Length: 499
Image 1 (cartoon, rainbow, N blue to C red):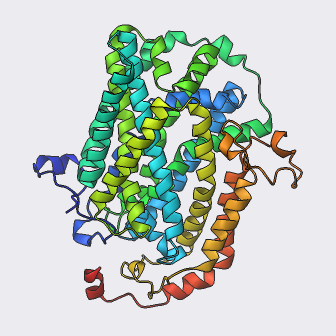
Image 2: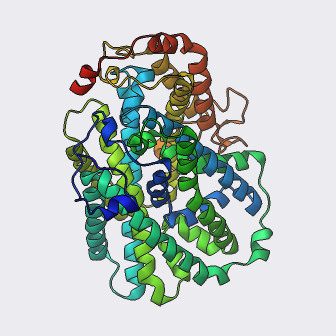
Image 3: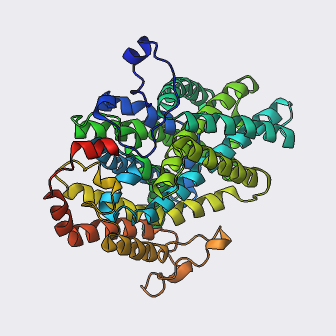
C-alpha cells in the first residue's frame, strides 16, 4: 500500500518502507495526505541535476547571445513547468495517475494513443539520464587513472540501472524519501562545484557573443521547453494525486512550478557563463554533456562530482521509470505496476547500452528525440489543459475506468485534434543532425517559411503550433461534451470501492 509523502512528521513515526502496490487504481481519501509544499521535494530532486549546466551550451548552440539565451531559458523553463503545475491540479481533483485522468478528454480506450506516446517519451528520458550517468562516471574514473574504459562503463551502467529500477519498482514511498536525500546532497555539492570553477568565467568573452535572429531565439526557447517542463507534463499529476482533494490548487501549481524551476534556472545561468567563456568546453559538452564539466575541476573534487552527477540524474530517471510504468498500464497492458516498471527498466538499460557503446553523436540524436516527441506531447498537453479548464467538478473516479461511463470509450474530436496537431507540428520542425528525421519540416516551404534551409528551419515552431491547436481546438469543439459529462450524478460509492 502506498504511504503518505515524506515529511519530518512522517519520518519521526519510524514507519516501515514498503513496496507500493497501487497501479492505476484509485487512491482512497484516507490515504491522501500532506500539503502542496511536499511537492517541492520530488520536483526539485528530479531537476537539480548538473545536466542543467549543459543546457547553457545547448542554448548557445542556437547562435544566440548570452542575454538572448538567458531570456529564452527563463521563459522556456518557467512556462513549461507552469504547464506541469496546471496538469498537477488534475491529480488532486482526481485519484489516479496523469494518463488515467486524461481519459476524461479522450475516452477510456481512446486514451491509449496518448498513453503510448507518453510511455515512449518517459522511457526515452530515463534512458538518456541513465546513459549520461554512466558516461560521467567513466569520464571521472578516466581522469583519476582508475580506468574509464569498457569495464568501468559496464559496472557504472549496472549500478545506475539498478538504483533506477529499484526506485521505480518500490514506488512512491521510496521515491519521496530518495528525492529528499538527493535534493540536499546534490544541492550542496553543486554549490561547491560552482565555487570551484567560477574562475573559468570570462565576462568579456561572454558579453561579446553576437546576438542571434528572432528565429534563433525562438528555437532556443522551444528547445528549453521540450528539454524541461514538456518532458514532465505527462507525469505531472502522478504525485499530486496523493494530496487531499481540499488542497489549494494555487499551492499545487506554485510548489510544482517553483520546485521544478528553481535548480534549472540557477544552473542555466552558470552554464551559460561557462559555455560562453570557452568554445572548447561548449563543443565538448555536445559530445559528453556531464563528463565535459569535469575537465575544469581540480582532481580532489572528481569523486564528489561523480556523486552529484549520478544522484542528480538518477533522481530524474527514478521519477521517469515510475511514470513510464503507469503510462504502460494506462495503454492497456494488464500487469502489476512494479512489473511494468521492471520491464521499462530493461528497455532503459538496453537503450543506454546503445548510447554508451555505439552512438556517435549524442546531442544531435538528443535534440531530434526531444523535438519529435515534444510535438505530440505538446498537442496532448494543450488538450488536457483545455479540458481541465472547462471542468468545474472533480473527476468521477469510477467512470475513468468504465468505457460505458460518462467519459465514453473513444472520443473522436480529441483524437483527431492530436493527429492534426502532430501532423502540423512535425511539418514545422527540422532535425538535420538526426538523419532518420530528415522527413520533417514538410510545411516550411508551402507556408512560405523558407523551406528546410530557411531562417525558420530551426525555430521549432511546430511545438508551439501543436500546443496552441490542441488547446484552442478543445475549447472550441468539446465544451458541450464536458457540460454533458458534468451534468450526470456521481457514481455510487460502492462502485468506487470496486474500482
